[in-house]
Length: 487
Image 1 (cartoon, helix red, strand yellow):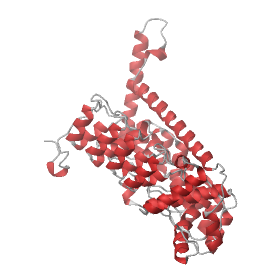
Image 2 (cartoon, rainbow, N blue to C red):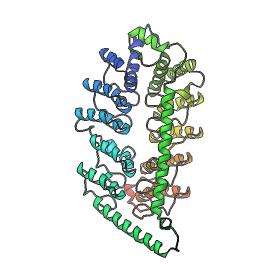
Image 3 (cartoon, rainbow, N blue to C red):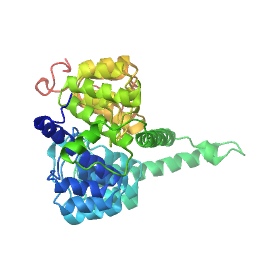
Image 4 (cartoon, rainbow, N blue to C red):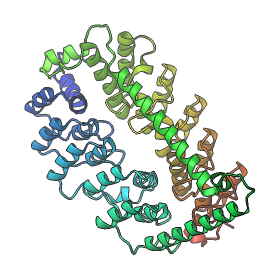
């Protein structure tokens, strides 16, 4: 265990604790404790095990005074492990005052990150918000100067998608803020051409509807006489998204309340740290809460550092404090559990240990992601198998599920796709252009993946926005992964 009388142990403990203390105090709005840490010489941009800084957490939780304090001390705009900056956190939380403060300090928005720009999963949220016609959120994107000319896997920009949905106010807003009106998608369409196609479709739909009304028996309802496939699909899609949103918000609300629950034992770790080095311990939380959060984030830090003995020590301390089911009640300031961290870092032995100790296999973090999601995007196949055996799922619906599956198809790893299907991922979920994973596999010429999806029940007759059904296309052998080449 840590020897509080040993200067080396204390220095190592302080190095572990100060970044997570900064993040924690920023999340709960404890300005006094952050000032004390700054006076002790703690780095303002110190990052935790997810590369999150205090500025990320202050922006995410909507604490403007903390944001002001951190920016006054020259906090930098840093990308976390999810590829997001405090600008992204402020946009997601719709914290307009914080967004204005960040914009004054960083008028050009976050620095460009080309890895993010070309990652279909990480930049999918703006497309989803446009498809949901969330104009208020898009305005926040534009205020944050986040990139709006990014292209998805089909070469489609946010303006293409806005034109597809025919939302005139959103189209004008994007164009006014510099959206490229001349870029071609992979189908050869400019945004303007998409708008023209939509107008033709609507005219055709109205003609078809009137024809049905005129030909229907007397007394039948004009509303019930038209049942276009696109209309019904859109309704089902919106219902699925509403269900996902409700589930996500109820889960995070539960996580917040459980994080603030008081516990009834003495503070050993926090008192030792405070007595040894006079580190400020927050007065806005009870000693029991302080103990819990400190030991939770320390365990997460030790998992990230691959220090299994210390992980076990923290677990014993947590069980002494909270009881034998301690793992089921652990969340950090981003609602991430030790199992999330183990899955994301590929720590098989630690993940097994946490599962035996009762870790919640389907816990959701701030972004609605489960440990299985973490293991999947990090390509931890063996961990995926273990989590799936323990009934782990993605807990996604609608666009987010389609985005994940399409991302996996683009990555081209058949084994990961097979594991995702085994977990129950919906094969026929579609994106904002009604394109499925089978459409993408066919377009890329990934024969093995295409045939596997068809064998598992993927719909060969699914039509996307452009009327295309999934079709396996021949690609030059040199441009394909050997495992997926069409031959």
